[in-house]
Image (tube, rainbow, N blue to C red; front, side, top):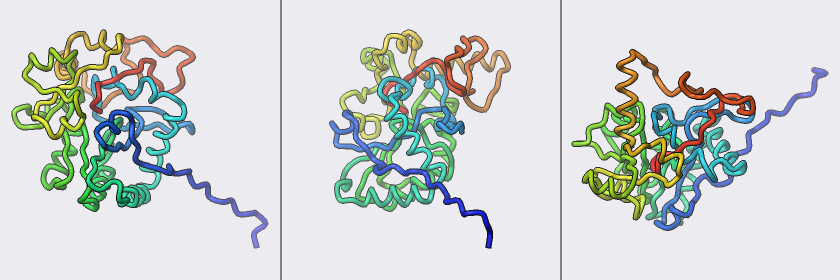
Length: 283
């Protein structure tokens, strides 16, 4: 018999509830599932990237600002992501069980009010969950164009609608003559002038209204200054053209600022980017 006592396996604490309602979702009778936005670091030092195709949107990301940065809120979103990363089958079972409750029948669930479909297995798990709950409606904004082209578009669940959002590294794959797309504009007047249709009255208009979806930018002064009167689509096109002209290629967003931007101060934690950012209401 071994003299060493067995060490119990530490099981991570799982979220008691997976789906929540913020004020905007409650107003339209919808629920949402949330992950941390873009790239970050867990308290144990492990890094993550929930938005692998994020482009300029990360520079003005609403989910890296305000209440999303509160410790209790951030801890909740970290717990959601750890559940997905550490035990995807367990997460799928838990999400299916929660959605099986009567109160979700006939309602809408927004998948990700921050974060995105970060991997093929994760997206496939969501598709199984959606198909198992035909009486619940699901919708999402996404910048994972290639992933959706391959895994969703050939055979989409009848109760799942999505909109591709500009401002990501896969913008060039979008066709505004065919795809349902969302773009962030400086204001409502700019949306109307472009002939697009605002979803300001209800987030569900992003998937139930006209195909060209306009989102008014958040009225946060330093975000508006960075936007500079552009749309996300035009801003991303500028960045892509500049990189092409200089022969700069990279597969995805860096976890540190470009050399042309200020370096983090000594007080900035490892893996953190000094600016907090938001892309309107679209993820």
